Length: 193
Image 1 (cartoon, rainbow, N blue to C red):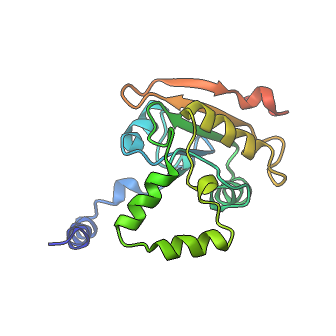
Image 2 (tube, rainbow, N blue to C red; image 1 turned 90 degrees about the vertical axis):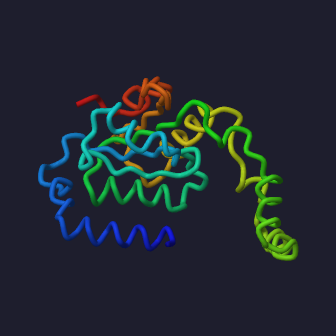
C-alpha cells in the first residue's frame, strides 16, 4: 500500500468519525500573529505548545530555515495577505538551534539532483537562463544569522505597515526554550498591546 493510499484511508475514517469537530475554529484568535518558522518536524507540536498558541491564533508559514529568500516571493506575499486580509497584528520569525540549513551546500544539493535523474544539461540551461543556484540554494552560517536576515527583509518591505512589529526568536528543538534575538517593539513605532 502506498503512502497516499494510507492517507486517503485514514482520511475517510477521520471524516466519517467526525474527528475534525474539535479542530473547528470556533473562538476568535487571541493572538493575531503570522509566524515564519522552519519546516523541521520537531517544531510541529513543540512550537505552538512552547508559545501557548491555539491553532486559530497564528498563521504559520514553514520553509527550510525560516528564510525570506525574496522580498516579493510567496513567503512575503503570505505575510502581507495575513496582515491586510486576516487581521494579523505582529510577525514572528522563529528559527531553531541545530538547523539543517546551516552551511547548506548548493553543490551537494545539485549532485543529489543529478543522482536522482536531473540532467546536467537541465542545470546548464537553467544557469544560462539566469538562475543563480549558489544564491538560491544557500543556507546561512548560523540559524541566528538567518533569522536576523529574514527579519530585516520583512521590516524593510515597502508594503508592510510601520505599525506591525517584526520579532526574531530562536527555539530549542529539544526543550522549547525561546530566546529573543530581535524585539520588534523597539524597532518600530508599535507598542506592545
